Image 1 (cartoon, rainbow, N blue to C red):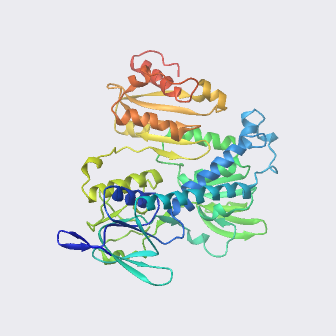
Image 2 (tube, one colour):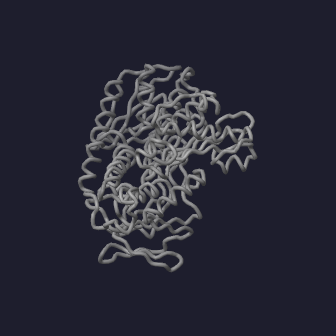
Image 3 (tube, one colour):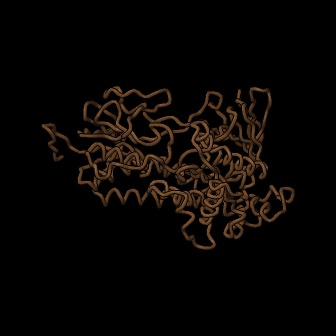
Length: 483
């Protein structure tokens, strides 16, 4: 290999990235476009990491397929939206899960090829195999044929992702138990399902299968679901879940599981027993750090395999950065990408691209969709910041009536004195797309008057911003809000 001389040291590469998921991919491409020599290590046959193969892409592809089906005449949402109610829904009419999964596979294959081609275009050298640190500025790659390559790196990025956690009671021969990886292998739509864990993954899959006609029971040991989300938005989500027939049990923990002729049975700490064809365990994720040789470079992972990083994602070993699921919350593909970019800019002192925005949008792909940015109402109350709430309901927006979304809502949190936008929270159709309008206004220093003075296409869901803005503005002026 050609050696790179920097400050008296000899390196094969400016940057070595372990993992080809969103964070690793973005880190590698950012460095390559900045003129650096980059190597990327990936142990799987296909590129893209868990995001492409088990996480974001397949789950969202399945969600979209189920959502489209459910809006049809046979779907649960279609029945309710047309006023028929649950009593007329036929639980024997379920979508062809195998067909929906085939569509998901096509999306995965295409995206994996796109990632591979992008790395090739940017001349990132790919090493197939398992990467682990073997010394200072040194990474060893063990290939499938048991041969090895030693890479000398000026900097390295850990982007190895995470895997589902399986509690002790869910281990062993329990074929009815699924996790967020194996659920994507289902061949038919189950009539009943228990979901353990009401975090983002649990809520997303619970809503997907409920919309597909499965009777879902969502269970969590906490007092509330989605604790990091604005409570009013969560209230609307729970209301929607229950209207679709979902059962929600909170402050309950699973004590044991056993196989039954039709699936399985779980016993809760209250003594209650529940039976279902399948049980999805969504109790968090474990970082894939145990085989990285972290002890060789002085990095310590916690009990969940996660590593601590600084503001720009530098680990305790100054030449190594960590991004994505392996560093914990928020563990989203979008944030992992930005983390990878910032890590590389920090490592190579690419200052003109380093400064980014500290407030990220979050998308939760439940049915209905949720997206949020900035402070929640609870956070503002806790910090005693003066604010008003501007609301707009989809049922009052022409496009909301056209698409049949009577449940959607957009919520603006506005500083009472400065009219600064402090937070935007949306539940309903296209929430994850709509949030970027509020994001742009917040990050570019705009305030409430931007929405009041702007003209939005008619009919669009984006008009909800203007309606919510006037709702907030009238409160600031002491006028009736007519909320």
